[in-house]
Image (cartoon, rainbow, N blue to C red):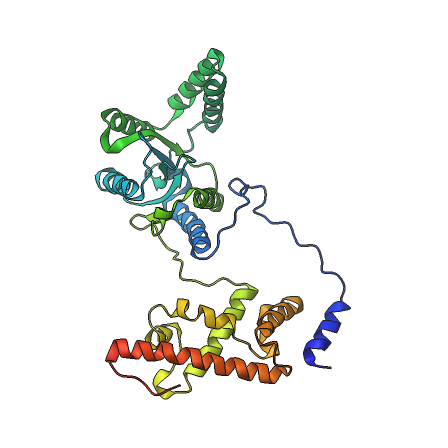
Length: 362
């Protein structure tokens, strides 16, 4: 009986795993979307959550506000949206809010507006009546839907209530944006400036929801546009990190295998990620993605996946590419030979581009 069969037999006789613990993010605001982000977009959302928490921690929870800027006329095209934001950024945002985090969002009609987290330097949260603000928004929504005069009158009373209690600095912001909208400057329409209610991480998940929802409304020409924009002294986390998961652990193990094969030749030594760029080119990650899918490691190397069931799952997935080999050792050897045959053209092409010469085969 092979080691794989023994592990399968042990797994079949094991007791059922314990029920997973409840997720702390379930039921929180901004986590009601069923869509999932993947790839770099998921990293952008994770970095956004951490940056918002760091932003609030640095500038003060009570000093931060959320500015929602809506265009007077819907801006749909990618270039049109970028020009409008660039104009507003240079004319207003950089001067008035040098430190900010901006998340754009598209409506169902493909029009775009911006959510901007910034700070005013003073405590504008303590005196603000969030309950009156929330009731005013609900009453205005009912009035737009049903057209009842009583709802409009109630909304106006609530608006007057929280406006009178607002800090003078916050009132000055409201006055500035009203004047800007009336003049028609920068195409600005309705603007809302309110203190934040949520904690740092909860607000990060709330704004991260717009990344998830916005992906469903993105069109083809949105490819390449920024998902998040950061102002001065507003970014501490980047997307240059790797997830801690069974799939990511296995990917790193396979990259270590490829690095070892490349290092057989003294001229193609790979000791860190930056060496991959030198040996295989600046797009090395994309170039080796197909190679990784057919890289078969020794069975016990899959222990990095963390659990026995995931270990067997990934082993059988990779072993299927070499199912015509009955012996596991022969399959691993065939995988190694195939990897070398794929790495050599990549290294040969990169060496020609850099030096005009070709290194010896790996």
